[in-house]
Image (cartoon, rainbow, N blue to C red):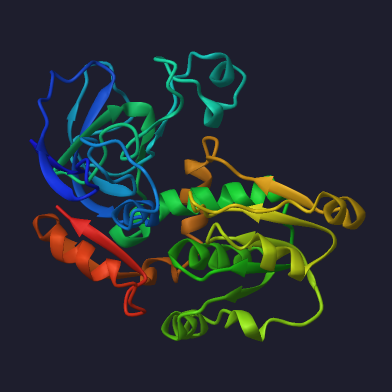
Length: 329
């Protein structure tokens, strides 16, 4: 079986996978649809490093085609969504319930499909059955692809302690930010997002979301929380944060550096929250997805897996015409 990897020059190419026999606890899935994440594009643009030879893709749905001998509760032909965060379950962090801080059975940290382990940009994918979740009939394939991003967003809500009645600013209005805005609205949290791309501002507004250019932000700090979905916006975030507020780190930029104004944070009682990976939030994300009817509309472009070169070329142009793109096997 072949899958899509990035080579040492950060260019996508096919690689062959030699599959060993299915273990008793594994599930084999025919991948139907896999989302192209911002991290994949960051690698292509040279903004993030990635191990070569690893099959990419970590936002995926498909149908079960094989079950290990000890797997129960799942069946052949079942529609499923895959959790890429595949904790070992045995290290001290996992045993304490902090599976997002997994040290890994090999000591290399949390195994994440499509990041440091083989992922879902392939025709088939195998993993332990505990990371495979039934996709409800009420959810489309497109909504299913966004379960993993939704789990990431729910982790932000939980870690930042966001509650109904707050006013939250999101810096950037890309796919992850739009998922966040839809969820926060559902939770009764008022949002405003910034976006430099006028086309993307229009997309947000068509969804009934408040979005403006960065220069149109209010002069006075009015937000109890600011979420940086870009990864290099801490200066702007601190200018918009009212006293006692918190800055939430959600995006990242490997090359970004920030001169930390310690006294300013101390005097204003500000907090910076690094959300990290979600901690077994997939069931919650599946439940939340069923309350977000606009979620599937964020998938705007579909490409055959074999047409990956065209897909990445188009997405690298950062056009406002697309929000979320997926590869279809």
